[in-house]
Length: 407
Length: 225
Image (cartoon, rainbow over all chains, first blue to last red; front, side):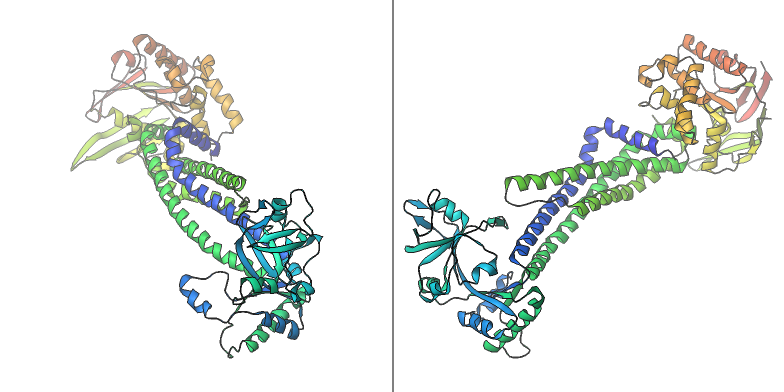
């Protein structure tokens, strides 16, 4: 029937009770805002990670002693695993036919580098690698050269440095051939890495790569290595993974039927892990927001009941003039849904705003979660509808004679 | 015959007691009559007005309005009858406070699905008829009492109903403004409308052609004026 009339009335009521409407809608606004805001950050993260993973390449995977994510009580279980060694890497290289390059590597987190009177911050990382380190990690040489087999064989004190280090230590000079000091030891710079940006809100350019042999000599043999593996081609990825698992189980003497005592990650499995991690957060948030909207819906129901009592005369007049019960029902339903949707729209705007704001002031990226926005809007409308039914039914059931006399 | 009430009884339950508001009313009213219904309070005149106005249905008896039996209609059918056949004018105007005069007059048309373009024209026409050409955009609180009642009359007229049913239409107005409203009813009557006036003021009832006096839920006297 008179849809426009109903919208007109709804707008008029909201206009005439701005404060009351706003307070009623606060629940809806906050609920929708938090879910949209959170979702834009999670989706932004996901996009960013995908991007990083794709850079890494579809045919690289990594073997590690520890999984990416595990609880405190599991730590014991993983710690008792045998370390992964350089020998393991050599065996893989020798026996796995689907594998092109194998790069054992080790990391020292949080080091500082010096050149003359300049120094970097303390949040840089030192990697011990082999020539395969660079292609397997998606690093490209900008100037100079990468590590060579000879560097490895002779435990040379040479280093390839990332862009952050370069900017800090060599703002004016050509770094190639210069000597930097890390943990009191001198390394000759032989190359620089191309800029690779940031992931997880952390720079990827704060790296110094030295020969693995040198690294192990200075920082200790007694550690588990990460082994990066490049399959001969993307199609051979699965075969390569199977071969590596088979070889490692044999060498590490894992009895048949026992699970692997090492972990394998590919970009795909990492994305999956991240999705699993965020899924729990998302579901939790959706549950909490659902409750928030439920409470908000009760608020809307309450304000509609108050509004109907205030406008009893109006309802009587409309009935006397020819409004049928369903006309009155419809009018108040539209009003409740409309009210709720206005809250939803404000919440969506605020949520997107918060996402963008966080992205602006921090390295965390944000995206605009279209699906969640649509879902949030539909959900708001539903809340308005469900919690509008009772007040609207009550209004439409009023007696016209009594309502006309109501003061 | 426009209105035919036969043996109308209306009982109310008031707690445990049953109140007999109307005890067998027989009234016939013709097209273009000008009738006043009078009676002291408690005589049943409000109850009778609600029945004639199709806001309520009788406990017993039949009511034919414009040929159709409305005594057993359901709420929605009654709403449609009210919209089509009856134009109400109330003592306290009963306008929507936040809507303009024009929108108030448009209201009955909205509920019978008249297209928006026609609505405006019809409402303007009705407001011009009651002499409010310059006040169409005003809200009720920007109008005087007499002007408000004129808006109410325009609203009652806009659907071209069979009856204009006025309940103490001058009760909230000073004498001079009241007389103006009564002149307006006179004009409408001359224009062919049927008018039923519910009042307890003799001098208001004087304007009508026929006075029906109620007492204790019965017709005491029914005579032409």
